[in-house]
Length: 103
Image 1 (tube, rainbow, N blue to C red):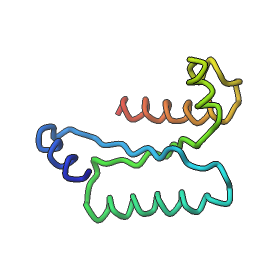
Image 2: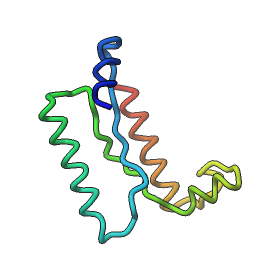
Image 3: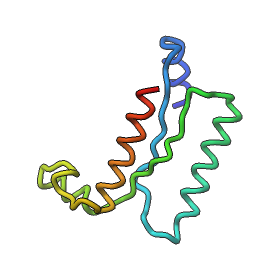
């Protein structure tokens, strides 16, 4: 994967790669795994000395609502209640993505 990124970076020097961790278990006992993954990615990023790869703060957790919304052909906004965790995951991600796009 890294080889492909380097190849594309040669074609587009303004390329910015974003890493979104998704399908994470919402089980609080497994939160250490997420922390370890983020640490590994950030360490690897530092070792590669790259500022053009950004680890997003947002995380998309594995939620039943995603599958059910797809089955019903609805967006998360249409399917979920206002404060439902599945919707909040995506809204947080969208806000972060828009913030980066504005930079």
